[in-house]
Image (cartoon, rainbow, N blue to C red):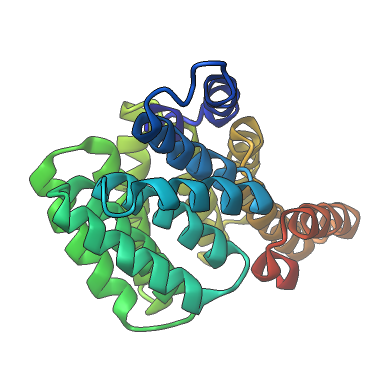
Length: 272
């Protein structure tokens, strides 16, 4: 989890790939499967769809019925991959099952992750459940006391507030999430929060601040290696620079957004 929480995805992936292919890697098959489920999460973060399917499915074959938490992690990776690809039915099914597995494993922290991801799906397709799921997940995260989980659910709560048109409350949630991400040295989370705050600054009429925050967010997403976040922020930069009258910069950002979105197979960002 530390690799995901602090944006060291490339480093974690390289180490796990080396461990999983070692000569004695399969001596303890269940430990190997747990590592495979973690690798599925890391490859999902980098948009490698075929590898997400490969590692999550092999982990499920070994873990299902033997390790509920491992099963939940593998289902989470597969569900998030389906969400990025626009298959929201499959994503919701996998992530709902993941939540069930975490409950059986008595792992409320991971359960709050499942709620956050389900809220993300609801947000993407415009369902009212986004706010309820985000609030429920936030309550669980606060009870567990993990600062990064609280930060992520605050960010999701901000998304849900924005979807209802309440940009003021959304900004408060994103601002608090940014503070917590910085406290916990989470490059990925900081980029997420900056991208949201940059967008809302533009919506409130401060294009210069929006441009500044979005540029910082783009640097963070590139550092982490997150193609979806990179594409999303490039698209937002395109709209901001277009509104500022810099059409050459806008065209550059939109073209770059489309290239990244196509290479990562994200229909939502291609549409953006």
